[in-house]
Length: 153
Image: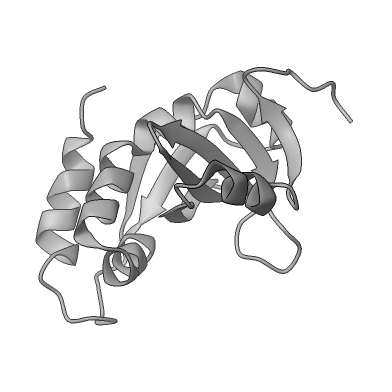
């Protein structure tokens, strides 16, 4: 899948080489459209998926460069083809978690439903140990999976 050129431009221009926890210009970048089947399962009002410079800056500051680059490179793939979608835990930022695996690594992308679109608020790599990943995701409610299309609740 081709990289989102605007997203890369914003990262290069407004995120990279900025002071840790420093101010960034408040922008939102459209990442992609969420597939209708997933949109209905996560009860999103809008299929447009965005990320803000604030979220990008947070991930840039707290993730390793390699992890940040991987998250950004695969952002559209995870949103359009997640392996599983979970309901996020109460009290946490974001409504849903998109889960995807790449080789031995698994990633969680946290999304928040807003009236004007769905926003990626964070993303991170889970443990490389499959047993630890299963224990971690066991406490989340599964909303949708490629393997099992769950009936509407």
